[in-house]
Length: 328
Length: 293
Image: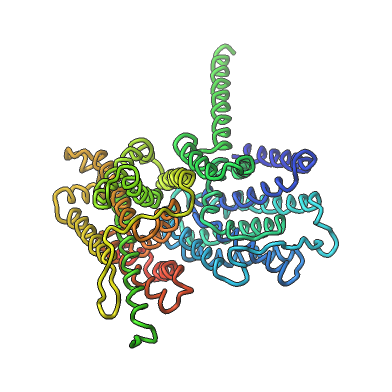
């Protein structure tokens, strides 16, 4: 689909321009929240959308990387950039272990195994000393980046987060459109055939899992710096469910779907934060509605609509040509 | 007071009993999950919420209708089971032709709705439910509350009855046949869609039954199911969903292991089942009782 590819790079350019201007109109902390969750959802989408693996435990990478980077910056006094880096690396290492265990089962079992593993990480975070238990790690200082750039200013920090997001997004985009990504899609479509063609399917799955875990960790570590907080909320299985919801709403297996989904769900939570338990109910209703009626998600439905229009138009053109030709 | 491996026997047997009780809940819930999965290929994420609703149903029957525990033990599973049948007909049945993951996502959404509604209505703190059989007996090495003995005995009976029904009766043979080849069974004139619906109702009823049993032990609260269901998933992965007897054994066994961990190394009691799951996956990916594919 070369057309879609060029097209999506153009969309990305437009989005970046919009994002650069956005803090002039929208509160930057809210935007940073959206960007962190968008990156988280994009990382999750790499697995569900392009390898067909539903991980129900991605919060373990997101939340644990937040703890690690928070502790590195607050406890050891590291540079935020190093803190984010170490959070990402730890998440990747966790991804290696969790992935090696989880890819031994397929389909629905994979979801249950990842869920159980993340619950294990949750209990570890609840009991471990360095995470601060129920309190979490609070008041993580916003030290100057590389000792130079003052990120106490929300606007400066916003552009830093935007840079991280773009880097993460481009890594995912490159992965999807590389030969490696083609093999991943082949595994998604027909695993047995990919094996028969001689691909070491488990290795491909594991690499994709580690990459996804690392990027989820990058998102979590960044979020800890932005909100100066790493807490248990980010490690719960409800958080794993939320990222599934974001991706489902935006469109699984679409490049921009997770971004749209994250923006919608984060805005909704912001808007409904006063309604307490209703948020849970509404999230549930959205889940049910999306699964029953709009399985392709918002972006997926839009692409399908555009494709239908396009093929209809092309068919129309072909008909006209055929009608014209005999007369020539 | 003598000591056993450095632990007072009161604590040891007390935790063992608690482990057996948790094991009974694991067994009942994973049994329901396995029966539903076998026929529908859907992992019922709502299972935890339905367990919670079973407990609430018992509480409401007592509070609003004055129906005591023994009535609730029969009525609550039927009521929640029927609600399950409605859910299957309205929602889940529309997804059979799709990837099984959608069933998981749908039931997850339903679980969020139920949990949210109950939390909205009853708050997150628990409601008390009076113990229907107070008192107990001193066995010399430990104190055995009657109600706990009843829970273990009764859930063992229910588990065995379910096993008997599925493995030894004609209805069970239809069920097992439909698990293997639904199209062939349908061709023999058996109404498979109706069987699927009733099976879902039955699995949900089992969850509700576990909820009623749990009500007098743990307080009745809206989050009681969501915490349990993740552990039950791990139990299901460890046992493998291939065999009914396997689910029962794994459920009780892991409950006991968890209880023992509480005695000897309490820090790990929350995580021990997940660690066992990881080890089992490394050594025997299909689960202890699962069939290799």
